[in-house]
Length: 192
Image 1 (cartoon, rainbow, N blue to C red):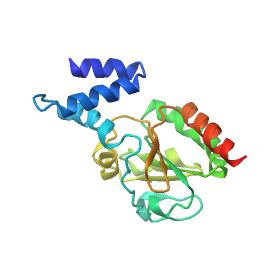
Image 2: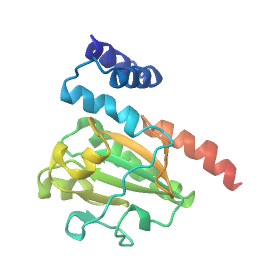
Image 3: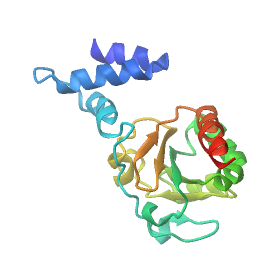
Image 4: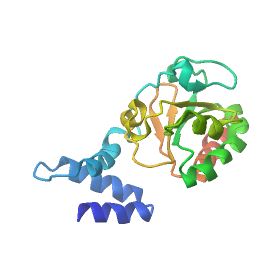
């Protein structure tokens, strides 16, 4: 029942209700959850707004830097970083991630860096997918079993987290439009 209700709430974009259900179920000691559902629900507790996201270490052989090389998220000098999880095999990612490239320059001017964490398993597919993107991209070729994916409790693609310079989760945008609205509302007004 919980899994069905959670699925309905997620499909209807009722994220506040999804978070409430997730936290209630996770805090119940008499409730047994399927591991996949538990992981999906855990994301609402571990990766909620205000929590500190794990650092991401960039390995040179797995990371493409269009401009400057960084060792980790902590080295990025801009006040905000949008971490996006996606893959070449994800139809929604094929549509949305290239669209992020269109916003990248204006977002970067407002203080937002973008990091793509790919869930691809094949190096050639990963490199073909990210070719020409103006932002940092990294891939460990482990799909759902990668350390970064597990650290961030990713269970679907695309998934986005907006972090401040202390890696505190500022926003969990569910679309590019929501992210663009945040940039327009908070950063553009702030910088005027």
